[in-house]
Each structure stands twice: as C-alpha cells, then as structure tokens.
Image (tube, rainbow, N blue to C red; front, side, top):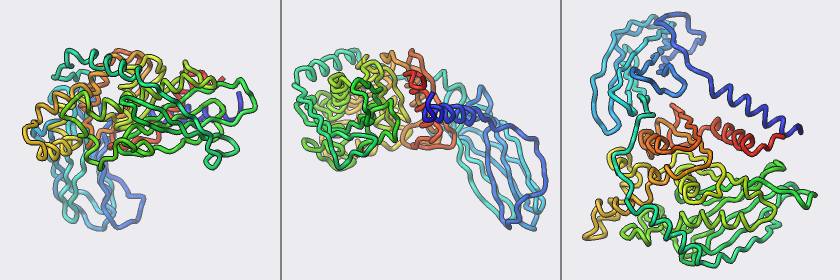
Length: 443
C-alpha cells in the first residue's frame, strides 16, 4: 500500500471514530468554571449524536455562569411540529451560583414519527437567550402522502428516447493554462436534449502508464452554482467530471435567466420545463464517460448537494450505468409538503404565478410531481449514501427522510444535528473513504 493510500485509510479510520462519538448525559450538577471569563454561556445538547430518538427526546441544557452574581429565573422550552403545530412545553426554576456550571435534564415527549423544533429559552437575572434545535422521532417510519404520477416512468422513458435522437458531438479539449504537473484539465462540450450545448470540466491525473484507467467522480451542480475543474491533488486513481447543466456556469448559451427565474423556467409545461432538460444533461454526461477509454465504465460515482443532490438521485434512478450515488440535502423532496415548510422553491413559484394569469399553484405542482426526487428514489439500484442537516431551512429533514425511506437499495443516511443546508466536512471525508472502499482503490 502506498503512503498516499495509507493516509487515505488513516483518514477513513479517524473519520469513523469521529462519526461514532456520542454526547452522553450528565446529571444535574454544579461545579467550578474553568474559565475566568466574566460572562454567561449556554448550550443545549441532545443525548444522541444525531438527535434521533425512539419516543422521547433527551437534552442537557448547560449554563456556565462566569459572573460573580448568582443567576435566578427559569429555563423553558417550546415545541413546534414539522408543519407549524404547537405542542405543550415545560419550564424549570433555576438558581445558578456565581462562578459555577449548572446542567439541567429535559425529557421531551414526541408526537409520532417526524421532526420537531424545540426552542430552549433561558431568562435569568442578567441574561436572556433562545437556542433553536431540531430532533427526530422514529423518522424511519415517515412516508409521503402524495402519489407518484401514473405515467411518471413513461414520461422519463420518452425524455431518454428524445435524448438518444440528439447527436452528442462530444468535444474534449486539453486546457494547458488550467493543467498542472500532476493533472490535465479538459474542457468538455456536448449536445443534449433539444440540441442544447452543455459544458463541463474533466480532470485526470498525469500518468506515464498508457493503459491506466481511472475511476470517475461525476460532480453535479447546486442551484445556479457554476462548477470549475476539480483538481485531483495527486490521487492517481481518480478522474473528475464536473458538469455545468444548461443555464448554469459555462452552459448559459440557450438559457440565461436571473437566479429566481431558473427554477420556474417553463414550469407551466412539464415537457418544456427546464429541469427536464437538466436531468437529461446529466445522463448525457454519463454517455460522455462511456466514450472515454481511460475511464472505468464500472466505477462511476455520481454526487452532488442541494440541486446537485436531486440530480444525483435522478441520474442514478434513470441510468443504471451509475455504480455509486451520494446526495447531500437534495431539494425538490416531497414537493407538495414543502409548501408548508420552506420558502424555496415556493416563493419563486408564487412570484411567477403573479405574472401568469390563469396558472395556478395546483397546476404547477401537478407538473412538479414529475420532478419530485421522492418519485425517482424507488428506482435506484446502486449503493447510496445521503446526508441531511436538521437545521436545514431549504429542505425540511422530514422531506429528505421521506425520500430516503422510499429507497430499497443498499443505503445509508448520516444526520448532522447542528448543520443546515451546508455539508459537514466529516461527511465529505466519509463519502470519499466509502467511494475508495467500494471501488477497491486502497489496494
């Protein structure tokens, strides 16, 4: 095993150790504050690493009173359900000595499978604050109340047939100005659905072995996020293809909308909706991979976050040539339920409706059903991993869990209780190590 591959294995082991760390409960206690800082610091910690519980959520609320004054008052909490329902809270009177630490245990009863916001409030002599947390109760039981369109599979079969009729006209051009001594960067261009030109970047390690073949990571973009080349940083086993779908990055020739308008571009017609073409762009990228003799056609890893997560799932669902899939907080998850829970893309849709007399939200949602990531999920056959953040304001954790539960493939979900719509560096480490193991790149 090379030093480099040994380092990757070490990172993998370290990441697993970090991932399995738990926050353990401590009884109500008081003690000396190590710091001499003259301030009050509070925290609320769930007693599981992912804030997922069977029936009752357990938290420890900690108060570090660094002041010279005893603090008297109360600590309380309020519970809000996934659709804004309010549930009974509770409170406790507190008397926290000067220069001390106090910890208070809270057992919070859940109200059936789902995710709940809990607002912890402290009101004492010289300090007021509110901490926002989210916990889950039996999320593995969550299912969507909304059915997949009866012709969903036929809709996408027709889209794939239309794509197959488009001559791809693949181009792959070496970019000396972007390349380095350890990797070559290529500008990739191809024709996709509707004969729209799309582009991306292929990065491959420099090698003296003319028969060397690389596993390929296909990176798909977030919403209106232009992708640049991913440098291989000397990894001799991996090539990277970052795709800019139509309307994004260096693929804005045919579609160049403002930020909020992209998601509603032709949403009044599901056959013309921008996301139909975007999904087909991703399948065309897989076609491109299969034209490259230096790439391993049985080592294709598709990944993305946010819209890229949606696209990764859609691509793996529609194209069985994908071998591994990772989605980080995928959007468009159980879309009809999003209406009550988040602002995106609902706010953009409502703004669009004001400019389109006669078009209704119901009609838009009827079209959106064909692009709901939960409807792609059951058809995924490759190995799959997902990450979600419980504080996500773009995709409610309830919605992404509904997507995950709809899958029957070999799958794993990682829940990060203190993250929002961003990705934990720990997940990236685990994702990388998982991919190396699945493709056998350590040996």
